[in-house]
Amino acid sequence: MHDLIYGVGALAGWIAFTYKLNHLRQDWTNSALRAMVAAFGFSAVAFTLTVGPVYQPIDAALGVPNLAKLFIHSFMVLFSVCVLQLLAFWQYPAPQARHRARVYWAVGLVVVATMSALIAVAPIHDRSTIHFWKTHAGETLLFWYLVMFLVALSAGLLAIAYRSWHFAGLTARMPWMRRGLRLTALGAVLSFGYCACRGGYLILISADVRVEPLVDIAQPFASLGQIVFFAGLTMPGWGPKTRVDQLSAYRALEPLWSALHDAFPGIALHSAAEGDSAAVGDVNYRLYRRMVEIWDGYLALRPYLPAPAASSGPDEPAASDDAARSIIEGLRNRQEGYEPAVVPPTRPPSVRDSELEWLVDVSRSFARLKARDLDHA
Image (cartoon, rainbow, N blue to C red; front, side, top):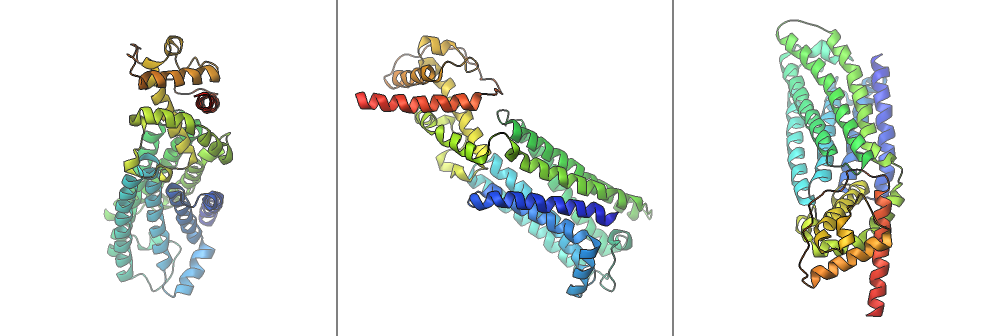
């Protein structure tokens, strides 16, 4: 049963790794995507090494019994580091995300180095055993080795759960990303069930009480949690838009976004001074960000719009040509110093099925009408 449970987790890891590696080949400069692929790779290798028919021959080839366990536990710590790095690139400007990533990696590598030192001097290298926890958890050095592993992994998983759930609340206009982030949070909580069971076992061991079923109960939490994790992190790519469609829509929004951004630079979620926005997240996030900034620019422009357009909200869109003409006139009014009208502040609705398509149509109409105005100037 041990090999079956972890084998399923390994298979899911390699499927997720292969799936996202194909995306990475198309967008190698994407820092968030690189972190995701690395996370999937660390997890897949860790689960694969846990399977007995793989673990035992590797131990034999290394010539140091139980050394493969260090690789398994280290890769799981690094897995959590990579996911935290991924979420940082989704949530923060590129320089801030890189700083956070360096901190995560520094802490993770210190943990791995300390674990390596503890297992190197522990008296466990005379015989190999698949029942590592049940056999060695009661030995002093291995007890603290396992405590450090669980504390590091638990901290990473709980941070991932919190940040994923919190960030999901900021992606209301991207339902597939929102669902994926919430599923990622659920996967982190399920994976934490592994830490809770094994941690409870260590606490009881310290009280000279052995409840070995806790070791076995932890296994399904680990495998199921990782499967849910993989599903959540890949879910944004399952949506109705393909990456080609998303890139096309992202580029189509450029004329409207540029005009509103030039008029109201404050709408930028990440300023140019904070780094290259293309490095923040993948195309799902960049498209979502551009939509948010367009709506914020539209709301800032409302006091300068012609009266009928200013009185209608984004949830009551006009035809794309009419909306584009209103925006052009509003930008002209603002540039010429017209006195802005008093418009009650409102927010656009959080979700509308045709929102992206309508914005793309408006942006294309905006570009066409602006070009026509220049020709007639």
